[in-house]
Amino acid sequence: MEINYHLPSFTTHYSLNLLMIDYMKKHPEYFRDGIKIASVFGCFDGSAWNGGRNVSGKYDPEMNRRILQEYNSRGIPLRFTFTNPHITERHLSDKACNDIMKMADNGMNQVIVMSPILEEYIRENYPNYKITSSTCKEIRDMNGLNAELDKDYNLVVLDYNWNNRFDELALIKDKSRCEILVNACCQPACPRRGEHYSTIGKYQIELSAVNQNSLGISGQNIVKDPFPCPYMSYDIYQIQEHSTYISPDDIESKYVPMGFSQFKLEGRNTRDIDVLEMYIHYFTKEEHERQARLDLLKNLTGAITYFNILQK
Image 1 (cartoon, rainbow, N blue to C red):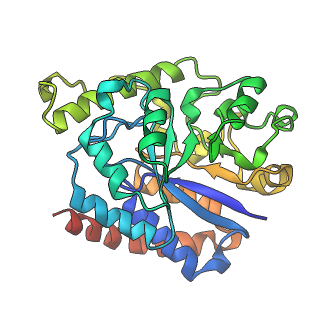
Image 2: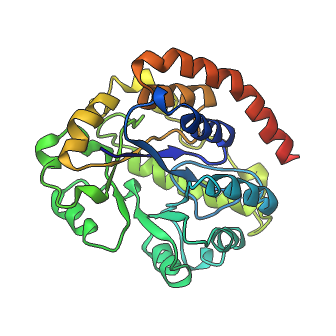
């Protein structure tokens, strides 16, 4: 049995993710059998191509190289969330995004895409990257999903509304290349999800323009949190109220036997403490939860302090 997890934010949760990765290697007996950290997804600051969640701040190439090296030296790929739906030809030359692609172009790192324009550009200019099709596409019909799996994608992240619909999941023809979002904070069949992704994409382009001091956009014109949503702050226990929630036991007893092996944990803009609890929930054996939680909490403050020193 192999259970591949894709973790949120190699920047926001930098310290926590590295602490968890190292702790899992030190104490494998505390953790569920067969689990593996397959990648960490997210984006560096100042990236116009980013989508799904907003990232702000200036592009810092030296800091980004350090982050990339820390993950890659542990055998963990970064997966860049280049899923902004509003990318046009003029955005393809974005300096920060192209610098990121060049810096991480070592055959290990990956990209998640939504925009056909950006996908074509990446395939032509950066062919060493494995490409994942984003859940932001909201593919909800079986013919469309199987057609997406026929394309040259390393993985296809399913729309979360497929979760726990086992009769339909059984009809997917290439389950091994499907990635399942197990802890979606959105309400099932959220009617605003597409609009939310669209708003995030437009806002990200504005943020990037301000941070790169281009396009003549003033930071004073940027509205904070342009799309408030109460579900964005849900923790792992509130999420369990959703019909789309998938438990770690269900992953082992239902999804893996069906042929699924790739699972995504969202939480890029969630607090470290909530993400840690989510990791404990999905990764640890029940009898070792308390010890693992305590050990990680004891070390987390020091790890965050170290990361802050690196940023100076």
